[in-house]
Image (cartoon, rainbow, N blue to C red):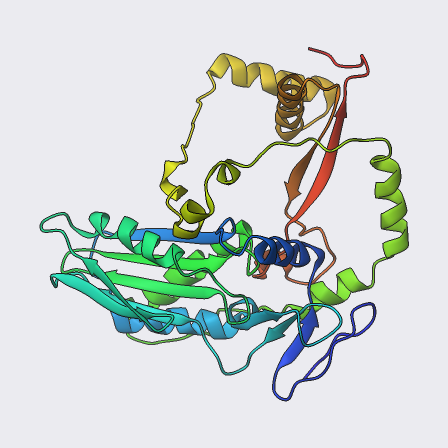
Length: 343
């Protein structure tokens, strides 16, 4: 199979394609190995259908996408070479669990353990989902096996789909593409009775890896060294660090987080639009600055650093907007109070 060389040498492996990790993947791998008991990058997507789903068609649609897109057939290894690699499998797919909640309890095997989830009477699928998510989180992905699991929960009147995956597999942009394609395949199969996957364009990881490997790393190093010179890290202790190892291992703090939503008034929105127009900036810049000012006051510092996530899809790769994988990158933003702010 193909093998990418250059700055990241990897050995060839029979029928597998072995590629270097992207910088973002290296970061995810580092933090996953450093905090093995925590599940900071264990992602869940949940979708509830208001009707019973045809499990045969749905499973076919899932398996089709797993075969089409390499990110769903990839595991990660840091012991077979000098540098960590990702290994694309040709004949291995993620596990798919079809669960019937019309019984008194749901039983299935996860990592060779017998998982039992009691089904509350007359509470529907909504009562089962939190239990299943909690059970899934107790089995962190090792990354040496494909870090993706899929669940289809069935009842007579409704169904639920849960995709469990490690963030190293794909970003939010890719997730939206995946869901769109999944519903497209499933809907067409149900309506026509024909399983046709010709409209789905396969995604390969190699173009991204090749492009990133060819970049001038010395130039990038010099640029960021100058940008960060004399800067000091802005330390904010993550919420998870306040919990004990036992709580982290059991993920008992996961549901203790809060979601805060603030609706901006039309007047504030208009002022933001006017400010953007006057200074030729985007709304994102305003919110970055607001966050930076908050950090300055919180940390009693005039010079703060924080990360800003970008899509990473400005790379000249054909079809990049429809490609599934991990393209995002987090860049450091530095905010210094030098007297030039307009408040």
